[in-house]
Image (cartoon, rainbow, N blue to C red; front, side, top):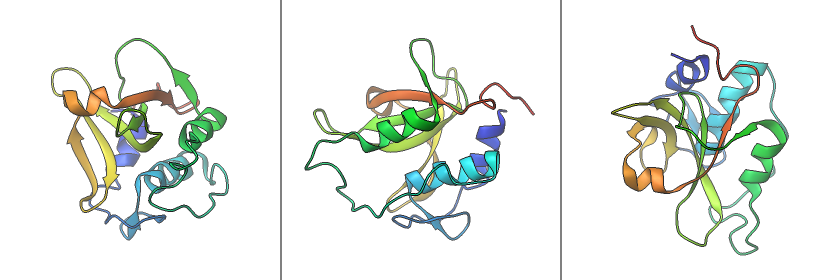
Length: 147
């Protein structure tokens, strides 16, 4: 298992709390990724301003993709790998604003994400979810690490 996946699985069961990033207490999808980053690198990737549930949608600004490009390495082509950060576009024509971390690959792929009403869960990366992937990224220097 990749180190990224192991850290993300440590957040399973954390309740969903908008704008939070505290393992076991509350997080949203961005908070989960921030928490994984902190465990990997010992610090926040950058200060995160307050954001609403519909953040950046009215302006059409790809805020999450921009942040990912500042801190992570884009991955194009090929199959999803365990530990990849997945950026989802929930509706055609909308901005990408949901994040998850690929956990299992192969015949039964899955990803870990914080989902409103569910908390941090490991979900099947089913065709409906896979179709929503707008971009993939890898964490620098740890994406290929194996425990």
